Length: 419
Image 1 (cartoon, rainbow, N blue to C red):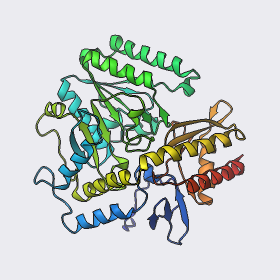
Image 2: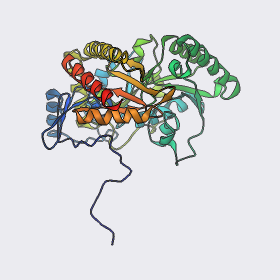
Image 3: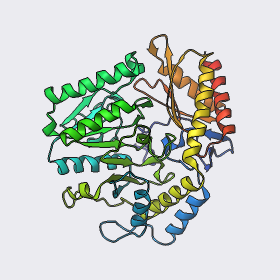
Image 4: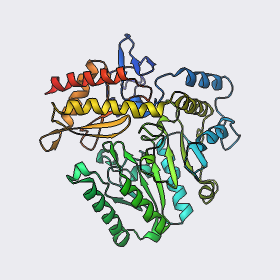
């Protein structure tokens, strides 16, 4: 007979063997009381650390007042308050917000908006990008074939252009940028005419694809082409935004303003909420009824997001991300001198990746073994990249120098143990 006791799906794979009974700041605590330094941050979500008192207080107060005020039925007062706060942070003229639950839903909303606003069908994305797991957003995702396997056909109208990943190509940044801009222009005459291209979607720092930053000339080249052809430029800031890169928005590093921003992860310190930001004029070009959802902009999540923004400002967490990111990179660069299998160190702020290689080949096995050894020693981290060869460093924005140094000390022990 079938065992009818409820179980989790066997398809849900866990990256560590840890059960998180409690969270405090930069630490996860298991049921036996063992503390783990959490350099995963729930994949970049717990930006203010686990259970920041001000975020907890805001959520508790909201739970006691109103848990669910469905946004297309009644107005939840927290939503206009959150929109006002976000409007102080987004670049002009991006002053209108559609709230949903997860990054992938924000991407889906953006797909609808750019097609309706431009009355064009095609979208250009960049090789190695990750934009989500629902079918539209998955169709824009090329970070790993495993995400797309077994669910084809994908949504039509998506064109993939090269991303200036200089280390991958074995070129200088200039050579990689020249190549990518040249190939993008070639797409316009071979695959998707500008008058049929609605938007370009790009991560200013690629996340799941391997923590690869774009560069100023490439991003400015995208802006120039979008302006020339009336194409919308959409920045997916789901992982790299909200202070993680050492600036509030990762695109601030490049001096380029997008037509829309996708926001999630660090927005509410662990509560599920995301946002699509665009100008009020652009939003008005969408079709009535095209934005909505039962749980989008939940009152408790919105209250947590408001508190998160306050904490980031009050505690100077963007500046801390820049300082601690420099400290972390310096520590890793010092290790690299003795461990040449650390083939590349890249990223921005507190979003850094170490690419492990054996000779010329990506070494996902070594990266996986490193994470196991780190876990044994009380440090939790994750992998990414097409071969899972990238050890990614993703601590909360509250991390301090002592914790950075402790994490890199543990990582060096793991390097020795897996050599």
